Amino acid sequence: MPKVVVTGKIPQMALDRIKSLYDVWAWQEETPISRAHLLQEVKGASAIVSLLTEKVDEELLSAAGDNLKVVCNVAVGYNNIDVASCLKRNLIVTNTPGVLTDATADISMSLILMTTRRLGEGERVIRSQKPWAWGMFYMLGSSIQNRQLGIVGMGQIGMATAKRAASFGMKIAYTRRNRLAENIEKELNATYMTMDELLQTSDVVSLHCPYSEKTHHLISTKELSMMKNSAFLINTARGPIVDEAALVEALVKKEITGAGLDVYEEEPKVNPGLLNLENVVLIPHLGSATVETRTAMANLAIDNLISVLDGKGALNLVTA
Ligand code: DGY
Image (cartoon, rainbow, N blue to C red; front, side, top):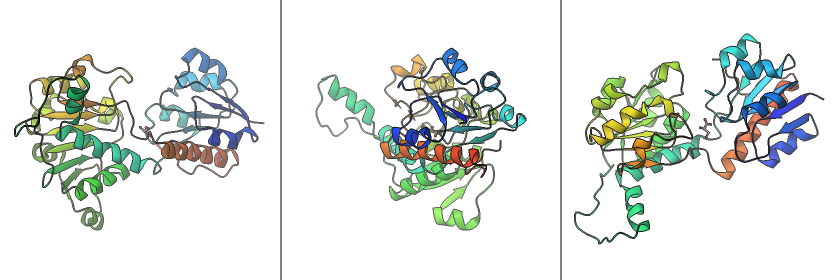
């Protein structure tokens, strides 16, 4: 039986699907496995089912050895995997697009509302039992109706966020490596802009591009200074797309009005400079965190695994 190593806890239903088919070793704790332990357990594996908390790099691949055929990531983002090394070894890499689109777009929309309407701040007032009273000028936020949402990276999650924001009355602008076809732009009622134009004109900028060397610190001091002082930045994509130190500075100096973050540059660490700021909403990478979505993600990773080990090829092939 081929050995399958599952690097983190996944829903039991998905695990049960492979238990009778392969020799399965799965980490069963909620907390991530230690690197040393994983390097030990991965020996002889034909397949690795990886979570985004585990780095699948040259060291892990060589620890696995020559039986390894496929790495199935239980995430749409795969920056935890050294894809170039996998391809050099003729390994197949798969991910889980589609099944987490709605859940992640829901979180982007939630952060747009939380930041513009100061909901984190409001909740902190109530919980700390500070005195408060309804007042004409008390804790006023910004309306989003007729305001421009600038989407950076208009893929599936960007589009789903755009649709939600449009139903709240926002105008949609986007930037993307390749401009969308005219009929899709029309359907989304979205205006294509260059990155600079989008940063300069948007009231909310929401990041939805994949993380790579090219998008590392895509948003840093220069980009933040191009944004309106009244604007908000939302990141549900990957932490290192934003230069967190530059963001702290921009928030402190009120160069932008606020930010909503689901992801962090050195996750799970959060830049201490963010922690005491009222104008930032911080949540712990919850984009895909619903029971239904996590089950669908695990099942899709397992579908890919079975298909590859059966010799039928990948369903969601990662090529670069
Ligand atoms: C993904 O799939 O990349 C998400 O970040 C997981 O929550």
